Image (tube, rainbow, N blue to C red):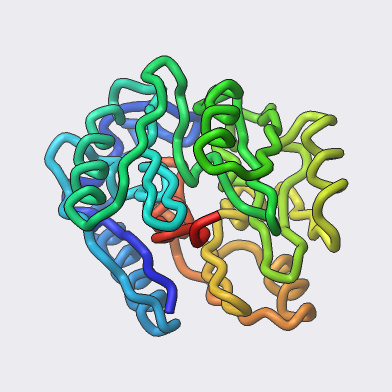
Length: 268
């Protein structure tokens, strides 16, 4: 049974603009957002997941995006050092919550920006880390030293896909689905060199954050709006569960952003 961490959207809203998707003039419809979050919660619960909830905090509307809060490996938790001041206040709450549950909290140096599972995803035994818009490449070396694993840094070049989890989703069969144009040439080559059977997502589906998916074995929970990808995944033996995520897409997030794995990987 996978253990996941979610945060109820009690204080969610578009209160500032820190990525190209966010516009205070186009705010989220809160009752719809709450219903969509509940739909995600119910779907994950039905897929044999144990879900923990961290209490939301006022004036931290993006705390709902728990994947960005840090990286959990075994019983160690590396909290995020958020680039934007608007989100920096989230980190102490997540660190305290983890510490109270027996996790060893390992902070990175304050000058190294790192945004957790938003920019760090395992593909096989490799931890792929995105950098440029939110995380610093130098933070990846620090993470590698803490975890003792192979970390491959890949540059993100499209500001719409500012975290790696918005454009890249590893699969348990050693493959992944991704939007290649979100990466620079080296990043594309590095991913192709280490993963097989890559599925390229077309732009009209990538902008629905189709790569921002929660993968639970052969079950995949992803945003609605990617019928071509769903067909391809079904042909490869995966069961897909598309969910409406319109109100969270307005903030630049979707299914995976709303979900942290505890742990993402057992002790290395």
